[in-house]
Image (cartoon, rainbow, N blue to C red; front, side, top):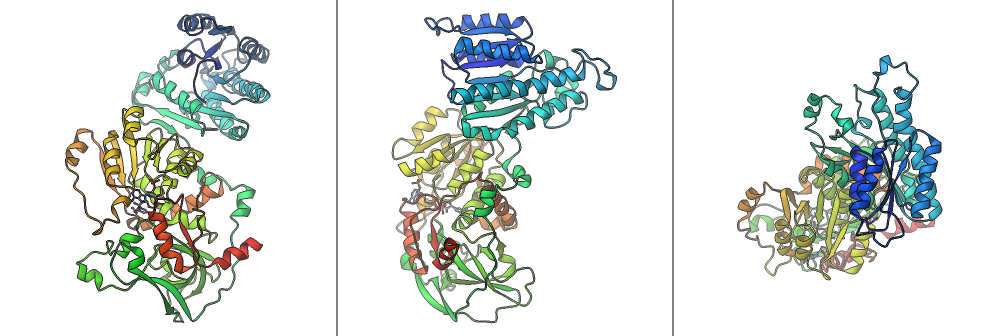
Length: 633
Ligand code: NAP
């Protein structure tokens, strides 16, 4: 939701502290505000807002702000406050439930029943939040217009606050209540919770300063406003819990990986992603595969399809995999040119011919005597050379068990794993940052944008073409830059003057320079690849990066490289996490619709990827009979 004049907001606890600051910040955007508070000080806040917006709202039939005196623990008064808001502004766009109190009597000594009791604290901090959220949802549903509710939780709702267990429990309740309401997004109503550590307000001032110092000081009110506005404006946030500390800034909790540990897939997804019943696999006497016979980055010229015998029995610790889908990668042309082997040109040439293809999924056709943990007929993936083939013989330790041998799973291998592992390890991505992804609608880019978004970042993505831009918008990218329509350099300069915090860069050449120059102070840029350089006339030539060290030094930046093969120890863990996010419907996998069938079509598929026309992951269906069988089921 764009914060623009004419919207109306209802803010409880608006007379002081965070509530008052939010009322002022909303009014500065020209938003009509109802200041709700039990304290008469709310009247002064409303007067201040009226003064603030005197010019902006002159001639408007609505007052800039009104004050409604209301004890939020009294349901009659709450109902009347909402009625007054509707009567005045005719609708409700934003509801911020900010009213909250600490318990004034230590829990063990609490014998009171009145406004100093623990029961009253729960009523104000939790029951009233439920009441107000409930009323706001009803109003927004009836109006059939989008709306946002922001509930004020607290960092003490995420971890215990031993000095005030009642406050902590009430805020924990607010967090879980809010997160459970995420499905309202389908109706256009987004309910989110903000969990700041201590802010310098009347409540914050009560806290022992030694404690505040340990936390790294008070969280500035501007950071709270920034977080609130992010939750209001970012349409992807529903049920989101934004944790704000002085030490780490804005951070969404839980992280997608954390969430993936305990969420179960929906029944629709379980059905779609149900595991395959083991079946026997016919093993022929020979099979077709793509081999590299000449070192060249012209994949078609470097390779040919050959027939090879299938020699059985297989070695004791080996597995024979029947490949059903193989994944196409930008770096197939680097592999065919020998760039991924070390040694002299002569040493590399002595390896010819060698098998091509980095990744595939299929069914286990046979296992050696020594393989006890893998069953014939079950689905598995490989990320070893030789996947552009009808069969691949690999050591059993290279087998990655998967639930289904589907094209989406192939996409999660090299492309998905590169994004998942590099963003965690090389980019050290957290949340609340601005992440720039290049070639974002491609095989790996599509994962990077979604993982960055899921982790609670603002995502900027580059692509060339309308279809790609549409996909990226559907994936929740905040700012799509279609370089065929506008200049990436100009957009970054104008809209991100402070720079971006993380860059996931895979294009290289001029794109590298543009992105590097847009990196913020402390920024981290991860070099994933350089697709624009792979197919030069005489092969891939190293570039000069004049002044690189000087630039890094001047802005305390980090430039990191990432090569997936060096992270094999993390593949299974990250693959499981991607598959889980996919099965929960939190991660979308786009496979390019262009059909490539059989090993004969591999060169076409590689050229198609390098044409720049592909959207999502390019996949070759090595054996169409499997998908036809499942389609019939
Ligand atoms: P991809 O992104 O699907 O590649 C296709 C996209 O790249 C195109 O749609 C186009 O997107 C862009 N592109 C293609 N040719 C280009 C050219 N000559 N100049 C500029 N842009 C071009 O391919 P991918 O397999 O996922 O690989 C993407 C990058 O990640 C590659 O650099 C690859 O080497 C790297 N990668 C690295 C690792 C690793 O371990 N480090 C692993 C996997 C992939 P737009 O025109 O829309 O930008």
